[in-house]
Length: 123
Image (cartoon, rainbow, N blue to C red; front, side):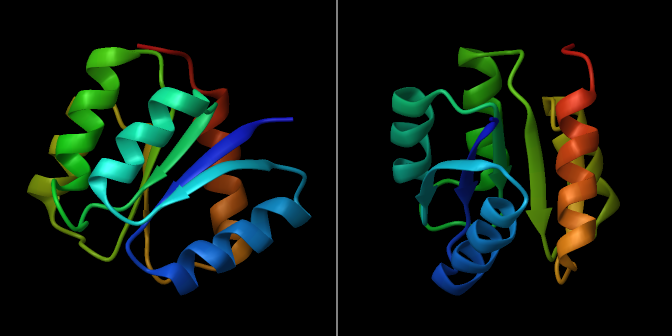
């Protein structure tokens, strides 16, 4: 069973994502609402996948992505964001994100994006 870390500043969205993923057979390794919690949980839990928002209290999701990839370059990170800007998208991909999912999304889009990201080879 794949372990997923959910990082988003919205408790409602984290709860919704958790419910969708648990129904689909994924295990949630933790939830973080800011960059500090995200890094602590990442290092403690070593999840198979990180769902990472870009706009977070503290450091941005892109800063966290950079740190995660510096620690564990084979990490599978899926960006979940409401920001659809080409510069942000290209930076996220160049930093190692396996995909970007734009809010709002439906449950099947989320599951499909996670499945696709998990099957991508490491860099």
